[in-house]
Every structure is written in C-alpha cells, then in structure tokens.
Length: 320
Image (cartoon, rainbow, N blue to C red; front, top):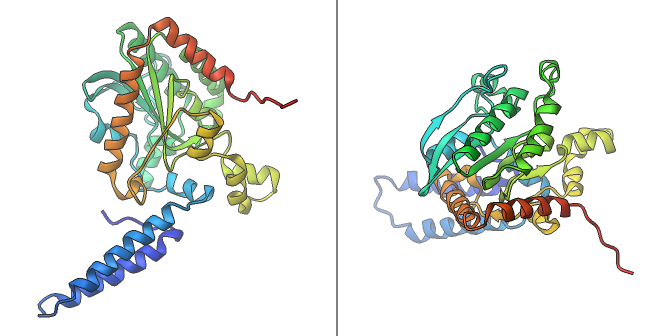
C-alpha cells in the first residue's frame, strides 16, 4: 500500500525515492552498491525515528486523521475473529457510522462497538464521515445490554470527529441518546474496555467511552473540542489550530498524566497508517490484557472502581 505522506514526513519520502532510484539503476548492471543501499536504509530508519519521537500535538492530530490509518472495520478483520454484525436500534433505524456486533478477540467472546469512517466519497456518505446519529448510540446501548444479559464483556473502538450535529439528529434527540449512554454505561454490570483508535471528539466519543479501561493508541487524540473549533472560539480563526492543539492537552501521553485515560498503546514506527497488521497486533494484545485483568474483579467492585475513576477526573488539589 502506497501511503500518502504528511508534510512532516517529506524527509523520509525523499530518502525513499532516492533509494528506489538507486535500485532501479542497479537492475541489469554488474555494480555492487550494497553498502550505499544499506546506508540509505539506515538513514531512512533514523530519520523516521527522529521525526516520530519528536511529534508535536498538531502533528499527532494529523496522523489520527490520516485517511490510510486503520479504521474500526480494519481492526475487526485483523484483531478480531467470528464477527457477526447486528443492526438497528429497534426505535428508528440502523446507523452505518456505528457498526457493532458479536466477535471474539483472543479467546474472549465479546460485544464490539465502534465508529467507522470512509476512505472515499461513497464510503463517507454511507458512514456519515464517522459522525453517528442518535440511532447509532441507541444501537450501541442495545448491544451493551445484550452483553450484560449474556455476561459478555464490551469492547468499544472510538474514532469520530463528534456526533452528528444536523437538524435530523437534533430532532431525534442526539444529546439525550448520548446522555442515556453515559448513565447506563456507568452502571452496566459487565467489563467495558474502550480504545481511542483515531479521533476522540467530544460527546460523540464519550457516548461509547464510559469504561473500566480507557486506552489510546499512541497517535490518537481525545478532546472536548477539535483544535479548529477551539481556535475559532479563542483566536477567532482556524489557522491557530496548531496552538489550540497544544493548549488542549489532547494527546495520549498528556491525557495519561492527567488521569483521563488508563493506558497508551504503542504504534509501529511511522504510525499505524504505515503498518496495519503491526498496529492490529498491538491493539489486540492490549485489549486482551485489559479484559483478562478485569475478568478477575467482582462485579460490584468493578462498578465501584468505574464510578470512582470518573469522579476523580478534574479534581485539582492546592498545596497550603
């Protein structure tokens, strides 16, 4: 798969083109340039490492939105097995931006729910650009209750710029649908693991994110508002999105320090968009590990810990 480079990845791309040119010129010629090829390969690796070890907040937002980054259904095919999609909220209809169903991860049977984006115009129209409608959240809650009934853990994969803000969604009570999910997930009597795999936008993300373990991929972001939205409010122009991204403290390491999430899942060098299989393996290991840990906790204690975790968020202590 040919990956479309981001602006800050250009130095790596230029070196890769140089390496390709050398290999083309070597075809059919009795010239040994193996040392040069090895040197350029090592330089590519070192340059990529230097770039990705020094990413700023805005660059991580760009990676989280990369069109070739693995989406929910990519992880379903690579990390899960035996997926059976279930449709409809039993009230209004089905929401293709929130696919969900029964699956197995490792040896654990579970209910898996996520938000799905598209890679072209047709897919994005079908998936509503990854922004769920009210019926998506109601479908998610229906499946969570199904999981509770059959003692199955719930896994949610978050990847949305936010819930859909259109007139139809408002008419069908999008805010109420999300609010009910927040309440019901807090008291759901089964383990819940959530992973932010790309964008974690506002209440649209939180509507399936009240969990015993909230994890994030290394280059995902999780925020109450998009950097562009924040910039438009505070700086009166979207061009200040990079500054807003820094101010929002929205990347995984910062949120881990603030206690908003419980763990960071590393990505392959260069980001998940460069290695779908590697990213899927890391995601699978993290989810299976979290589910194994949570399965040992009695339900009443699980609920107590879940409640306490969210109550502690935002508490600020002052030294006397």
